[in-house]
Image (cartoon, rainbow, N blue to C red; front, side, top):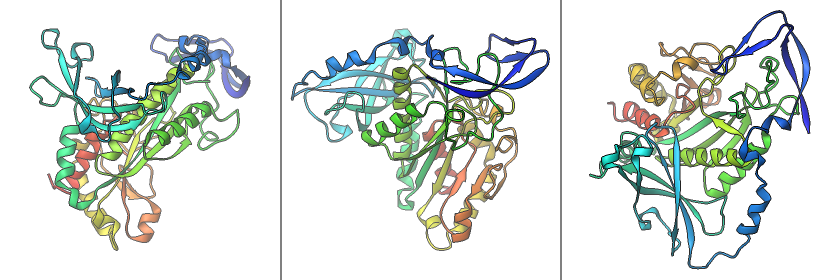
Length: 403
């Protein structure tokens, strides 16, 4: 099976650098090319016959045994790890689950002479891969003295959410991401050129405009099955780029859901033989980057004339711009520097801005919110690889706790 794309071709050729960027030379022109499923031929996972697994998943599972996959964030602050154990009961809440440990020296979280890092279960989800009573367990991580690891941003966020619980903080997060093939190029992009310019791909339909919908649909259904509050999905502006939305959910739920939904997405990528990247700017040049816009509201923002509370929150955020930029990507703004350029529907990383229905600002007030005089604000600064615990923590500490 194949589909057509608009390809930019050069008469004398295109050189591929070691960093994945393409260097063009000679005279270029546009033409129609064909990309086939052979684009996955270098993926070892794509070559595996997945139907064989059904032989073993069809084996009856003992009634008194379930499989629990513990999932956690590693020392990079964006990578996910997991391992499984057998339980002889079906837990109803995370407190019933045993703590566990792992080798932190292999996850950038400890030295070899004191490498045990402890896992504390925080949320339970149904396992969409093993199904039955099997579960995914989202955990946060602790050193041997039970202090949070440096990459455990959940602990501080939980503290903040407890302090503001009377304000009923809601969060909705828009996760953008990009599919790559095994050589680091966006999935389906020509090996010796580029797709046609952005314009027809956003929310598009058709084989010449959409790449990877099967994975998106599988992810959507898997998240619903797992218990994630996934609220929608759409194709994004750059070809092979997609978005899904989590929430609106109260307190930590949106952040927990986002992390486990990321795990499910990467896990599905294994099955399809496709790499999922959360890089905020996977392709240099005039291609849209990827963000994780965070929609935020409190009870007073959602009440009549809540627009005044929204404006007060924006005024507070304007005074803490640098703090939020550091909280909004794992490298304290270094990743977002490539994305927040003031171009391609972004604001400048150096300046705070706000506006109604404006996608080139730091904080956007949606048109419907402005018309109803209540609702929520959208913080467009978080990068696609942000830690949502850091983002939501920063928002409530600035807007509600006045820190």
